[in-house]
Image (cartoon, rainbow, N blue to C red; front, side, top):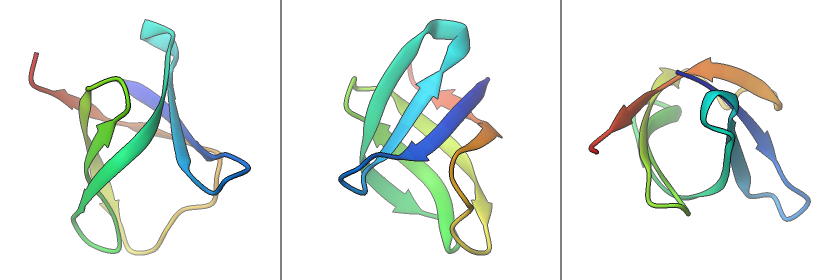
Length: 69
């Protein structure tokens, strides 16, 4: 599914998933590479995000996979 990542005014990464109309803050990252890996969201969802060599410019739309339920 597609997810839009951006940084809020506090520097935290926010995720918006248009298909589900869900907006949440990334609360934990298990990195794979310089940026990407397993992202835990404030709503309890866990997303698998592809690895990037460096942190991307925000906002950015990325194809992600939901892990778990």
